[in-house]
Length: 115
Image (cartoon, rainbow, N blue to C red; front, side):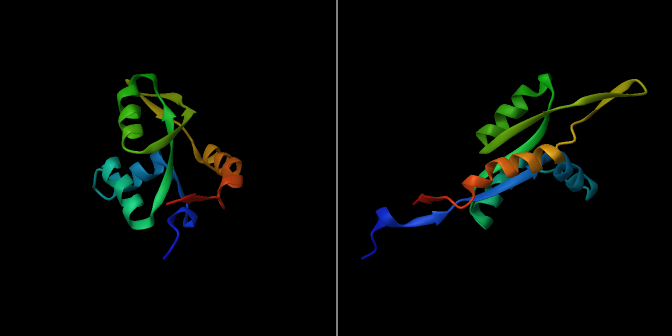
């Protein structure tokens, strides 16, 4: 009989650039459901920790709370506001932050969790 206390499983991490993912999906004519995407990562790839890198805009607090409730660990990046005509677009450029954070977390990658 297998001792369940000694059984370990891998902890799978996902590092997601929210802007590139969202724009890529929009480019295909779809709208991404981040909640379903988190479930997909969990069910298909057994992702235990999904880090979502996202630009921080103060008025988006309800969005950030919803993403956290859906199981994401949010990593914020300050954004640049760029005026375009009468509107404003935001640029977060989380790529460097994603690489840096993944390197900081490197010491945790080979850890296992008990099932």
